Amino acid sequence: MEENSTNTPKFNIKNFKRSPQTNSNGWEAEIIEGTCPNNLSGYVFMIAPFHRLKDRHLFAGEGVIIKWDLKAQNDKIKIYANKLRTWDSFWNNKLPIYNLSKAFFPAVITPLGVSEIANTAVVNMDGRLLLTADAGRYWEVDPDTLETITPIGYFDEHIISVPLAFFPLVANTAHPLYDPNIKKLISCELKSELRPGNLFTDMVSAVYITYWDGKGELEHWKVKGTVLDGTPHTVIVTEECIMLPDMPFQMGVSMLLGLKIPPLKPYQKTQLYVVSREEIEKEHKGEEIEKEHKDSITSRLITFDGDSYHFLCNYYHIDDKIHCVAIQQATISLTDALEEEDVKHFSGEPYSKDWWGIPWMFAFDPGVLRKVVIKDAHCQSQEAFIHPGWFSTTLYTADPREFLTKEGYSAIYQVYTGYHRDFICRRQYLGFRDCQNRILKDEQLPQHDVPSVLAKVPLNRNWEELTKQIKEEQEQNPDTHISHLGKELLDFYVFPDGYVVNSIQFIPQEQGYIFTTILTPTDYLEAWLFAADYLSQGPIAKLRVPEGVHFGFSLHSEYFEKVIPAKHSYRRYRLLSALRSITKVPYEFFFDSLDNIRRRTSSN
Image (tube, rainbow, N blue to C red):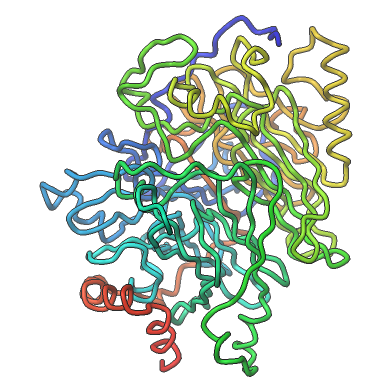
């Protein structure tokens, strides 16, 4: 496979790890190209990990919340940022031995327990702002001032994976869902267990569905006969069921604690455990439930092709069928990162210190979007969309106005961060060269870097036919740059060399806008605004972010139409949390945690 490009993109690698300075008055991002629509309003909240030189992984630091006020004034947009003040991070500069023992992604192990990071995703819970991650409790932040308010729940309200510390490990999902129809946050939590018959690989996890109404204690239901090798990372919720993925990347207890116990090789297909919401929500309606079913629920297992990391799913079923999109990518591992001993696979050159800690998130294979239809806990059909020049699926967005419509989502807006040879280390290549989900063989890989792409992929198209058409165009037009194939078929934008797309958010106003943050080859970060229906025309506005607010590599985001100061009516307290962690948590962990938690909840 040949590429037209002959110049290697020059990245400013230091941009990945920068973090904002403290400034309570905010900053102004100047519009350097184009114009923002006069009626554009609302707020975009983004999350980024706080970066420290000592961190072994780009995603190891506690969350930094960034607020963009979209109402432009004098060709400038106001930006605010603040670091999450978790209780374990308070001790970061207090105890000289605090950081002597460090783990890998996502946690840092200390004498006091496991760090709480809440650095991955943002949840709009009916105007309340929650920060989440795959490990640690969720945290509430004031959307007006960005001040940290409280963690969600005392530790003994949660299902604990590893006890015996002031900060025990809570393993959960970075993507819970707030269901406005029942006004509850739906999540899941994991409890570590030894792997049956094999004590020399990482542990497995029992799974619990978790509900929270925003004011009381958390409620849990154990999913019987269901154990995960990895992490769910997301909870997929429809009107009738909850689906729990077993993700292909491993993030068991051993990896969280930095122990050198090899993980079991993940299953090479997507696995979803499907749970009916009926049994859970009968309790909330006061209906009688058989005693043996009160504390646990059942699941059914669905399997389909590919390595899935994120999902876009319709809330309402269509003709009794679940329609969802799985965002898939082979040859990556978000739990692994570049280390001092690593070398660049294609050149054999070592990495400088600035590269250490960047995860294996750049693939050496095209990304896959897989449209899946499920009925009666069976995969009824699946269609894969594969563009031969679009590598490394990362974040996505969709029109939130379509979430609760009967027709469901009409399109997915997908970021492909590209194929960048210098980011692929020898360990990553050796780990995935024989991956059965690979599309390209070694001899088919591009000989030069392939840029980032932002694409709108309609869901009403036949994706198998779309893939076939682009493949035929490639064969008939060998001189066409591989990233630009399909211009007559799809709406997409190819970014300049050296530019990497970070966060992406749909702005639900008029025809819709797409707001993205960009790592540039310069010392400045930028934000680009696109018209959602005209991506190929390029950004309608570009903003340059002041150097002081440079927050490096950012992750998921959420749109708020308006911001109201938090009421601070829900609180959990630091000293009481510590006392309950060392007194109640160990007992509940070893002596039927679910029974004790539910008994206490029902008595309150």
